[in-house]
Image 1 (tube, helix red, strand yellow):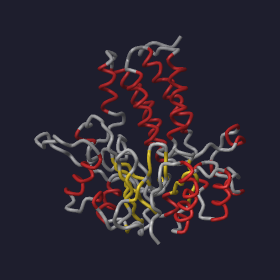
Image 2 (cartoon, one colour):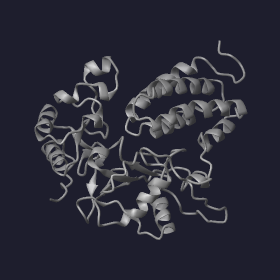
Image 3 (cartoon, one colour):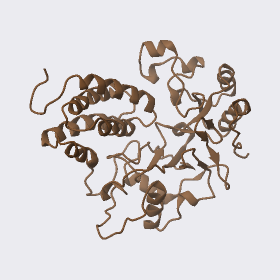
Image 4 (cartoon, helix red, strand yellow):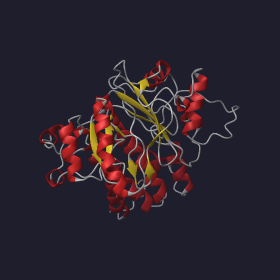
Length: 368
């Protein structure tokens, strides 16, 4: 069976194909859940779930055929899929990576400043004499990692399913035949990460299905294999080394892992608020959020993110760092802990920053 072809941009053309994509994925044994029309995030929970927040494991909605809680509701039941897309034919399709036994390497190509050398390939020192001119994105860092391991570049691996994203990135799909139960990460994380601008989608996350159309474009399968190949051994070893095993910490040796982004401290200094006290506050509140990554459920993530945003909002109001830098730091921390909850995290961050800004936090002084 071949991967579904990408469809056109016309809404009426793509509506019938969305269910076909979902059906094809489910036929591969990959649990599917809907994505909001034109977006790459799940649709909203039902009103009852919105009014009474709770853990997905406690929710009865998926058991009665509702799509609440994103990838937690994913299914291979063709009748349920038909019912979902009957309600909204404009839904896109997402695949729950863990239950599907998938590891997807998500290569980003976003314009951004190159981070400190110890964050380009976490756990692998890059000495000052190494010329990094031309290194700009995840394609480069993944190729560099492969070259260091004397392995082929996964981005060029025509033997597995590869999907071009609307932003110019690439999803490289693999099967975890060894059942490692790898976990997700983001390439900007200061904790668990494979390489800068290279995200990992596995247990605890989902991936947009091939041929899914969004308002930004279509996730287009590239020429080559139409199904995922087994995860290469060298990549599995790198994921283990960098802490992606679900039940075991990483093995990154003696390279220290910063608890707050280097650019966070730089942002404090750049704003004229470069006091050690402000840096310590940032360190503490961001670490509380990123530590939730080790506990998929029941870690109090929303409360910790809200408290962090409130505190950081106070630092912004007191002039210790800019609003833009604060928002980015909080987004990075939230993605490290909960890679699949961007929309929820963004709402919590905006609310917390706004509330905290009303109470400037002058380091060393109590709030009024």
